[in-house]
Image (tube, rainbow, N blue to C red; front, side, top):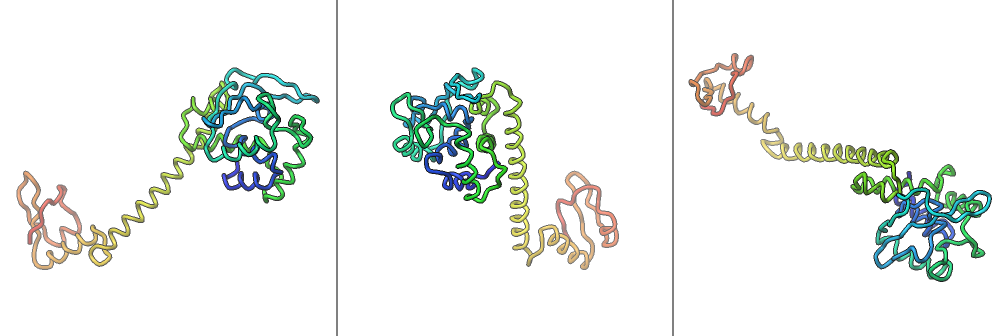
Length: 255
C-alpha cells in the first residue's frame, strides 16, 4: 500500500497523459481493465462520479467486454480533489466524442499493459518508490483508504465491484487496525493531559499524593475519625491506619 503523498508523487513523476490514470486507479478504486475501457460517456464530472460498464481484457490482443460480474457494473463517486485534473485530461489527452476512450496511448491507440510498463518503471524510479510496486497496488491503496474513511462492508463491496465479502473484509480489517492505532494515540494523549493536570495541583503532587500528605499531617496531631454513612464513628491511630485502612470508605476526615 502507498501513502497519499506517495500516490501524488508517482502521479507527478509519470508522463502527463497517465497522471489521471494513477489518480483514478487509487481514488476511484478501478481495475486496469476498467480504466482501459472507460469512455467519455461514463464520466459525470458535475456529479463527481464514474459509471463502470465496460472493461478490456488482454489475451494477446485486446478484447472489449463487460465486467466479470454484475457487481462490477457500478457507479463510483469521486473525490473533488481529482476532478480538476480529470477535466484537464479530457481536454488534452482523451479520445474524441462520447464513445472516445478516456485513456489512450501516445499514438491514439487503446491502452495496453505492454505499452505502459516502461513509463510506469520510469515513474517509480523518479518518484523514489520501489520497483516492486505494481499498478494494482494503487487500487489496493484506494480500497484501504475507503475502509479507513468509515465505509461499511456493503459500501466497500460496491465501490470495489465485488459480489463476495471476502476481499472487502480484508480492507475493513485494515480499518479496524487503524481504529486501534487511533485508540492507542488517544490513550497517550489522555494520560499526558491527566499528568499535566495533576502536576498543577499541590506543588506538582497528584491528587492522591496530596490527600495522603494531608492525612499524615492530621495524624501527627492525634487521631483521625473516619465517618462512614450509616455506621458508627471510629478512631484510627497512625500505625493501624498505615497498616490496614478501614474496610469501608472514609467520607469525612476530622482531627
